Amino acid sequence: MIARTAIITGGLTGIGLASAKALQSAGHKIAVGSRSGNKTETVERVKLELGDEAWVGCLDVADQTSVTNFITEVSREFGPPSILVNSHGIFRETEITNHRDKDWFDQIDINLNGVFRMIRSVYPGMVEQNFGRIVNISSTAGHVGAAKYGAYCASKAGVIGLSKAVAVEGAPHNITCVSISPTWIDTPMMDRAIDRHAKAKDQTREEARLNLEASNPQGRVVSPEEVGKLVAFCCSEEVPALTNEDIQINAGAMW
Image (cartoon, rainbow, N blue to C red; front, side, top):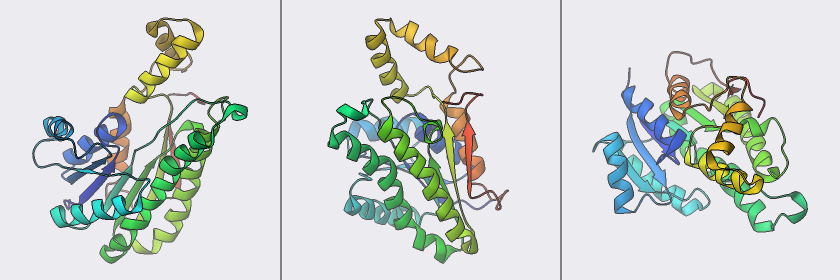
């Protein structure tokens, strides 16, 4: 196996961190990008998880200059990236009729446009290497609509469509691109959702969490590590034909 340079956006917690660990275990050089990647305490915490050989940098996927600078630094540190995992994302629960423009545009710009900016920036280098693996974390929300999740559903559906287009363009250059659509995952993002659900329904946090678990046919919340292992598999050289696909990791749940 060739040790390659892997960029993971949103890699400080949850799916991103689990993906970074799985790719590191596969022998790759890890570069984690986050808006708080320039904070000393953040870097130290990630180093405890991934070791001193991992690289952590400041990255705002909503800013092309930040994206360009980040990729330049990664290339200087490790060489040009040939693996990209876009695991960043935000969501805000808002009804359409009360939806502020800022809440809509922020989710579209980070969740969808941010994925586009990252892919556009690493793609030429992947073409030069004649190798690339791109994994975009979407969501079951990209397949099934839900009240108060309009912008999130739209952005994640866009990620699935963008991934398929990139897969077709990249095929002649040995560049694969897939999206992965998880259901509820045990992450800080889910914790914040539980807080809102508990408050809205006048429940305890434990009751709200149990309701989420009960809504899943397997009666549980999926772990970030499950997704991370799937990400590493999709980034391997074992299945070069695995592309142009959205893979749901949903434990049987539609949402």
